[in-house]
Length: 351
Image 1 (cartoon, rainbow, N blue to C red):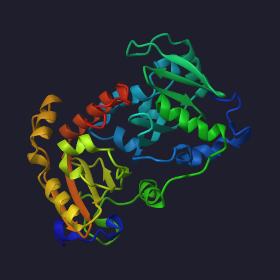
Image 2: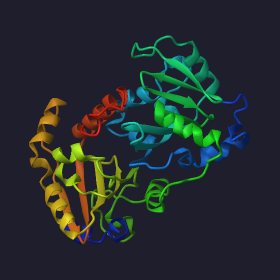
Image 3: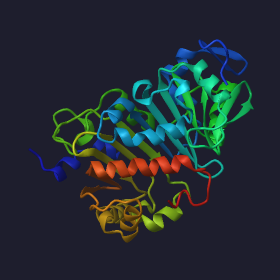
């Protein structure tokens, strides 16, 4: 059995409104079968994503953190029970993207089984959402965008709903309105996201025969995160508090929700070996950061930050770690609060 550190060195792949007829969606004056949108949700994602992620929702709902995700779902679909949406039953997969369009913008494609007519009726009839804030309908082309403050949703088909802040949803709808329904994302991003759909293992490189890195149970990946944050100024404020982000280019992460809560393996790519060496040192010292300890305390987390295996290989840094249930719950509380506010604010990137 290889050690965790040796196994990390074996990560070459990681290092390197709606129309009335729900079977059709208007695209650039033409129509497209709704099944085409349901089959390839990444077609809806605008270009220029800083971060992209996909999540197998049932894996999350069945985990110890399942109860903490309720607020996140409520923020993505801010309607009451009359809409007929029960997240644990209806939501199957979520695709998400973070952009820098007019600040920090967030888009999600929520997939599952929905009654779009009931959802629209509930949205149109509701004066206030469960949070007490008013739900506002805004017409955009052939679609109604339903928002609370700056966050909201657009029902597309009985299996696909857009959610996010208004700017990102408009850009996604533009892809439908003007016939740009293609996947305009780098191959290295879509390849890793496909690992979740294809049932990749959360182990060293996801390669059969390699020993587990992040979990002895060798569970299927439940989520993936990819990103390219190399654009100048994107994470300048955040890198002052989290130094390993300095000079960071690409990131790749796979994970699941198995014991002890969440298991992660991933890699960070820097412009050169020296930047990667510094990145590895800073990542290895993550639990020593006073800012991070203060942030965790603010959110009510009294435990220790998890230990992390970190290995540099050339201009990339591989890592593996395990998060316990209390820290996973804390993460989802933070996500819920972020999706509840207007993302397009100057302080968003600086946390």
